[in-house]
Length: 339
Image (cartoon, rainbow, N blue to C red; front, top):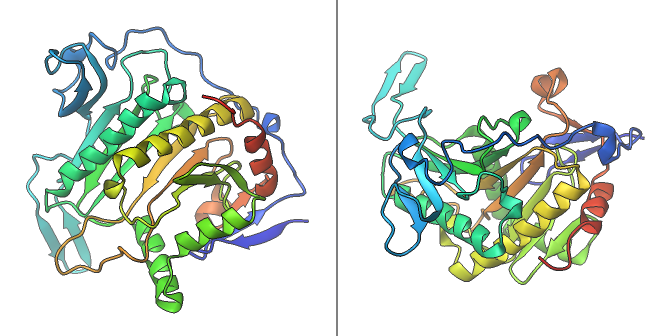
């Protein structure tokens, strides 16, 4: 029988259509055939992208030249532009902002044929370090209120270039989806004087039905009311509101978890496309509400094996044809012992 489950953070309902009880192979998803390189993101093709704004590279190598391991460039076709001055206009019921922001591409490896999950833990740590440092840099621009980092892996997940990369967009407003989480977490904090994400961490440490993997600093699990089959959340065990505050050693532990999850997902879900999204608090700005005590940064990994359709758009509900506890079991079985 189907079951309705409520997300404890934002009160969103999900229908677990467990009578379908679909297995990974029932979805018919698979990885894409890799187009041969080189592409514009490959090493040696640096002149084909905008000039880099940040990179991790070898000693005695020059900017916009080979010798890098992770490279950040402005998006060639940006949603928002950092050069655009901030302007705010209100006309009756209509309100607009100028298109000021930042839109960057984080090229995760110089190798055209490697994916994030193929990289070593040390290399993934470098990618996570770049995430953090770019956020820290963009926080200094007081036009921006929020910075989102996301990865689209595969064409059906939104990727237009196969070469392994993530994207960063800094924007002058707080997104609606983020506001929902912030308000839900703040309501819980006001009622219980505790962070709801810390309680979620404690719950999963005491109840391993949906737990996938953990280490000293992080844990990964299938949430109680997942929108999508095999949806995964990664949370730091200690309370920390903003990803920018993650310490170097913790980035290494995060990368270990990511590596294991990506290996498991590739094996469990037939190399399914996916989205990886970093959820964090807005930049702290004077005079604005602080969520340092009530919010807890985390990552969400969303395999792209079902489609959002009319029911979801019309109701805000989601239908998930895979029982979360079953999904966790599948992913847990394929977690590698060594990486």
